[in-house]
Image (cartoon, rainbow, N blue to C red; front, side, top):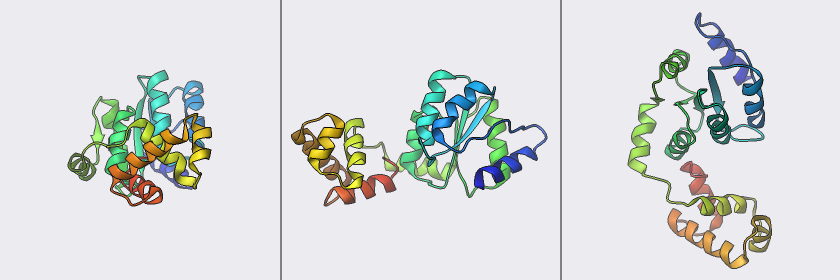
Length: 190
């Protein structure tokens, strides 16, 4: 419903045409390959694949395509990850519709568009302290898997899993892995 509403709002603009819509992140790349598009508007939370992962794929295969990330989750960590994945714009969903249309026009002119409040928060927060492997292990642990299950799934030893989790807990300032997952998600690090 939200996707269709955004498409309808953008379709009201005289100089913007919505040519394709997909419901899942893992459908984005195929749709962009099949239908020539200038801008992809992605949500961070999409079924099948996050908008951040989809942006990374688009940047790798269709580097001229502009990517706008629109999200409910205005978290500094998400902003940083969006920029690292090659997004050209990052906006929160509670922004006025006119701001979205303006962002589409601006990225087509080669500008980067970032919500200023989030940009300031991201600078104040600093970089994500978790390494890629720490993020992967912590994220995989979110479902309550044991160290043995995580080790098997990630092709690591149990001791290595334990070490990564310990470091991630320490870096997030958490008391346990569940709290570390919550903190990392709240900050947009996972």
